[in-house]
Image (cartoon, rainbow, N blue to C red; front, side):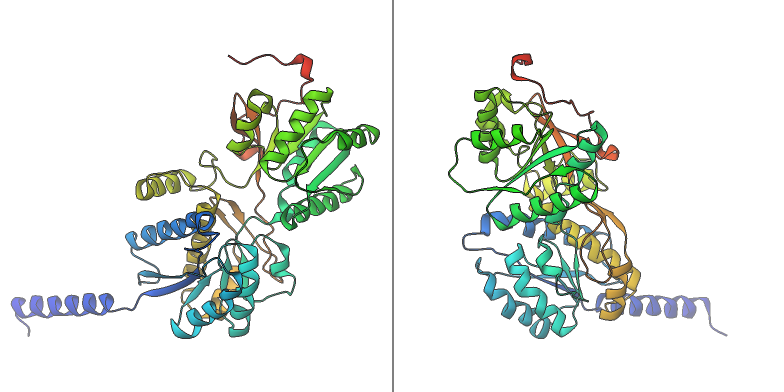
Length: 395
């Protein structure tokens, strides 16, 4: 019969052996490629920082599957074509347990086939185009806000207001065109009256010809997809010719540059907000706190994309119970999860994101306030868009 001292000694050895074995568990390697040099480095740095905040948070909470997370971040030098070789390196060289996609659609289009061919799960964190998922991948799952969803909120607002005729414009770049064409397709399905997308090139400083077309079409709503300067020039044109549609939506009208360019004339503009630090999305307050503490600045959309991609991957790993790629693939296909970007939910056949839709904000006293969806609403939308002779100077 063991003495009390012997029993305690054996228990202590057993505890230390278990602790040693646990400490010896190899890290869970998550690989990603992020532009850290070259032309896109400034745009992509938020994505990298968001991923690092996610890693810190998970590891501080004890890791995943009893293992610490180790991010392996490679630099593509802002050259999309390098992503194919770099993801091969992560898969075959680093033996990554899971992958997170690179920053941007072009890079993701190069990375996705490598994941697919190797049957390695990849969370598409920042490839927003439908093109990534057109070939029906089985191992690539989109957590980014898809371009196709950018018009969803404004169509809902227009429907609620009884506006039926739409005038949709888009800059002649691929992302704006995809947003506009997807919005038009959805509008037609919902019974709106809408003509072909009005495409325009860069360098315009007046939209008077487009205003004439909108008037002739008796459009209730002007819905535009392009950068903030375009939105500003549209507003300047409206004021100059005395035109005010019942609803004015410009995707980029929530960006500071737009407000800088038009000042108080930005008031009452509607815009899409794929992310904002003030949005009351799930976990956003905590994310903003962690990010601000680590980086001494507020997170932007790219940072939220990185953090959301990690959040989705972590939950899928928990549900799969291991890093087995088939189990992880099944978990991601079935997963529904609230993130800082919105609700992750995908088409299980394509991996395409179907749940996340950008909020709609309205500029009120120089600040973007969420007006859609109701769950995030900080104010009711002020509609119709006021006539220019009805406006008052803000003090």
